[in-house]
Amino acid sequence: MTSAASHAARHLKALIACRSVTPEDGGAQAYLAGGLAKAGFEVERLVFSAPDTPDVSNLFATIGSGAPHLAFVGHTDVVPAGDVTLWKRPPFDGEVADGEMIGRGAVDMKGGIAAFLTAAEAFLAEGAPKGTLSLLITGDEEGPAIAGSAKLVEWARDRGHRFDAALVGEPTSQRRIGDTIKIGRRGSLSGTIIVGGAQGHVAYPDLADNPIPLLVRILDRLTRMRLDEGSDDFEPSNLEVTAIETDNPAFNVIPGEARARFNVRFNDYWSISSLKALLKREIAEAGDCAIEFEPGMSDWFLTRAHTLIGPLSQAIETVTGLKPKTSTGGGTSDARFFKDVCPVIEFGLVGATMHQTDERVALADLGTLSDIYRAFLSQFFAARR
Image (tube, rainbow, N blue to C red; front, side, top):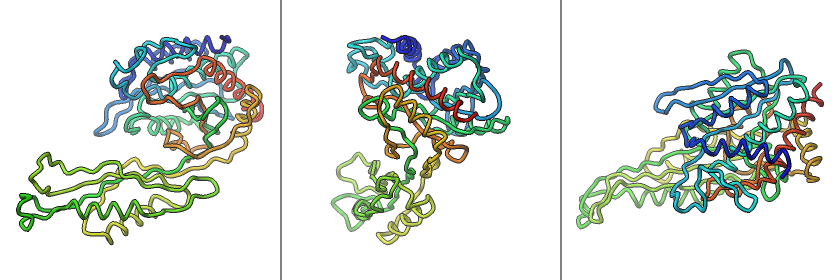
């Protein structure tokens, strides 16, 4: 095992042991704060609140001064482990088997944080950066994402921090560490369709009004739509029905209301407003119903900044020999909170086991990612001097 892999594994094991299932912190940010302070960072621990959502722990750490200002963005919260009896190893122990560390968050994304901490320690051992390096770490990425990075970015900017570039350490690699950089994401729009009816006995349908047939017709209309064929930079937009509900446990009762939830991932052919208008029109033409859109929608974004993509690509090629491809596929991330602030890209581990039972990362990959991040820091600050 390389020195970088050994150091990153030590950090990752400690982070996995912190049961930081959203919105709990479990000591994860305290551990990270200690490591960053030891490396010379000024660290601030912050708790943000918002209506109808739990308080969230956040961390802001910075070192250096002036431009360029690079932000590393990540989250210490993880999704629940589920039925722990289905895991081959305990999900919060960070045990190693066959060269892999197993645990919730190993890939998404405590592994990325451990690798960046390792890289920052090595980079700063050679002196302060010719600029500013910051870490913005939230405990709310896997949850509502209301009292997390959105508020953390606003807090930092209110205090005079101006970011020139951001790197989000989410797992982006597909088959080999370094094969893919995310330079953008499609937007996300969620909503609920509500069809009213009149409850009644199934034996007397003339005395009731069943909302389900109309809801089915509406959903058929929406799922048959071809929103677009994709663009030069993005995959085609797609609408997926995610739930159908009547809140009716009885076989002999016609429900008085039926609901369906959906999500649309949309590309640069659409804006949030134009997509909303289309859906309202299509649903209105299908029948009498209501539609409610969820808060927290995110628009698509695309980064073309060579001053960010170039140094990272060069670092990846130097360490691995791979020429990474750029991609805009996948779901949303906290990159959406930086898209209007500065150029932002995502790069991290192979994400094949994220959110799965026996989530795991190869220790060799941890070392490789640490080396890439270390090389990237040198490339970025050298290129911007």
